[in-house]
Image 1 (cartoon, rainbow, N blue to C red):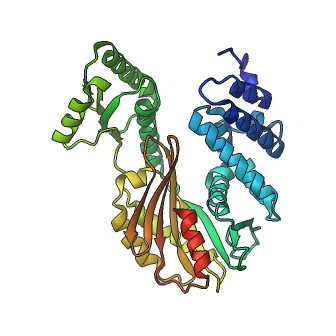
Image 2: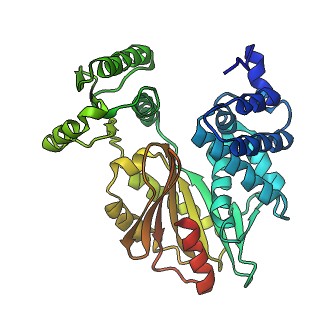
Image 3: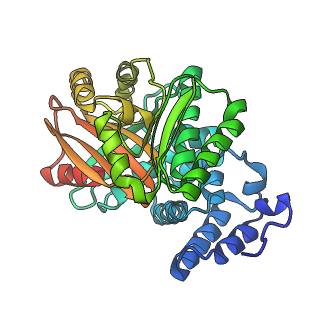
Amino acid sequence: MKNIYESERDHFKWSKQKEYISHLDNIEDDIKRKAINALSFLEVEFGAQFLKTTSINHPIRQMISNKAPFQIKDLMEFSETLQILKKENNNYNRLIQKLLSKDNAQTEGISLVNVARMFLKEELIVSFIDEIKNKKTPDVKITNPYNKDVFYIEITKLNNSDYQKEINDNYNFFHNQFNNVQPLFSFSGKQFQLVDKKEYPGISKIIADAKKRVKENDQIIYYSDRRFNFMLAPPSYNYDFNEICERNNIRSIRFNGLPIEVDETSRINNKIVKANQIPEGENGLLFIEISPIYFLTTDIVNAAIRLEANIAKYKNLLGIILFSEIVAPKEPIQVNLGNNHFFSRKTIENLCRESLFIFNNNCDIKLSEETLVKIYKALL
């Protein structure tokens, strides 16, 4: 592939981003065309200088910069959602303002788009609500155009402590090494202590050297030090690898990061007070963005029981949605947890969107059965 970005400044040009996609050889021509159209739309919405003036940590800029096939499809879906929203009389400009700022996009803007995407597919009308000073207002109004049912959604995010951020960063680093950095092999591993970012280059070399030995010698490789261990196996040894994992009660194709010792379910419970933003006499949902590590480390059945007990006091709250995204080779699933609670995972190739819906069985429901069915379909 020819060198598209001849200078660092070229990364800030929408035209170069489109040109780069046009030269990719790992996606179909139809996907290229749609991705380029998506970039053209986003350029109009966010401005010609957006890539130059925003932080490299802005979630939309990261979405644009990452040219993995799954991320390109996610970008297309993101753009399509905005295009649908722009056609409606729904206070679309408020959403764009939330997305322009890095901090607002991270804490609320991207979640607003995720919520909109869920409910638009059920032909519900999504509107964004202006904040009114000294008055409790939710973030989103949802209308069923077929019967005029209305419900509201309050959006919040469970932020991490500094220690949790370090744990998450470590986990994402190791996860990337084994799931995305080529070559890829069957693996299993575990972290024993917190790793400083300064150690990342050295650890990357350890893992790269191990992968090289696996490929050249066609053998299972095991590595261990005081910080972490891992095992890698070539395709010819997958049976032996799985036997070793089963014999030692090890989960294959998984790297176990450090446990988050804080009781995250208690922290989520503390967020449920945000349900007070839902207008009195109306039904609503509470959408809480969480770290993907929560679903990897938590007994969600017990968590659902604890959270259900807390939401019961909010009579107008239909339920809560715990939502996260992770890049991992997982299959889409739906798990019924009883009491109208369920866990769902949707995928765009390796991008996984996971959600836990906990229904409030004590809710004074004012919505029709038709609307309730649409809500469940949107979340599944």
